[in-house]
Image 1 (tube, rainbow, N blue to C red):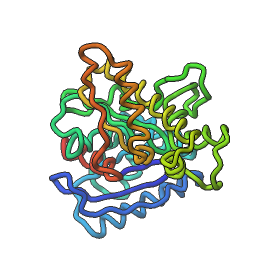
Image 2 (image 1 turned 135 degrees about the horizontal axis):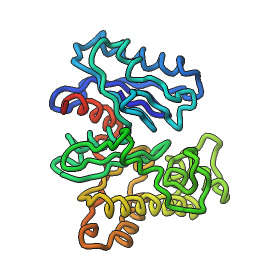
Image 3 (image 1 turned 135 degrees about the vertical axis):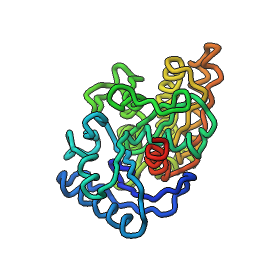
Image 4 (image 1 turned 30 degrees about the vertical axis):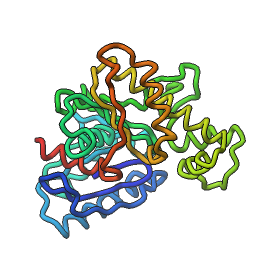
Amino acid sequence: MDVGGTKIAVGVVDPAGQVVWREQRSTHRHGTAEEIFAVVAGLVGTALARYDVEAVGVGSAGPVDIPNGTVSPLNIPAWRGFPLRARVAEVVDRPVVLAGDGPCMALGEHWVGAGRGVSDMVGLVVSTGVGGGLVHGGELFGGRTGNAGHIGHMVVEPDGDPCSCGGRGCVEIVASGPNLVRWARARGWSAPEDADAAHLAETARHGDEIALAAFTRAGRAVGLAIAGTAALCDLELAVVGGGVAQAGELLFDPIRATVAEYATMDFTRGTVVVPATLGGNAGIVGAAALVARG
C-alpha cells in the first residue's frame, strides 16, 4: 500500500517484485480521518477478495512513528498520530509492516528498479511533497523512528518561505509540484486555475522563461540536498522519481549541474543521479519489499 497526499494505491506484488494487480483512489485529504481510512479499507478489501496475500507492507507519507505504528502526514491534515498499522491489521488479519513512503520508494527502486545492485543510495520522490529514503549497505536505513532520509525537509534556502513542517526554505517548499506552480504564478506565469506542474513543464518546453526558471530553481534545491546527503552518507547513487520528475531534463539538468558543483570531494564526486524506473509502482513495490526482506 502507498498512501500519499494525492492518492492511495494498493497493489499485489509477487516474490520477484512484479506488480500483478493495482488500484488507486483519490486520498480526499481534506476529509475526516475515518473518511480517508475508508478509502484504504475499501482498496484492501478488493485486494483480499481477489488474492491470497501473506502479509501487508504499508508506505505512508510522513512523518511516521514506526515503534508506535502511527503516521502524521503533513499533507493529510486529519491524520495526526493516526494508528495506521493497527487499523490496517484489523482489516486484513495478517502481519502488517509500516514505513514512510519515501523509504519505500527507495527500497522498491533498490530491489527491482534503477538502484538494483547498488549498496548505498538515496531515493527521492518529487511530487505533491518531497520525500526520500536511504539504503545503506544494501538495507533500508530508517533511523530511530523510521524517518531517516526525509530529504524534503533539508533546508536549502535558510531565509526562504515557511514550510508546512514549521521550518523555512526546505526542499519541499521549493521543489514540490504545488509550490513550483505557486512560485511561477507569483512571478506572472499565466495558466488556467487548475494548471499543475505538468502544465508548467509543458510551457517550459515551449520556452516560457518563468516556467524554465521555476524548474531550474527546483532542480537546484534537489541537487543541493543530494550533494549534502552524499557528503553525509557516502552515496553511490541518487534515484529521483515522482510526478514532478516526469518533467525530465527540465528538472534533471539543474539537479546534475548542482550536484557536480557542490559534490566535489573525492568520495562524493562520483555520485550519479538517475530517473526512477518503477514509476507510480515504486512505493507499492517497496512496501512489498518490507515484507519480502523480513
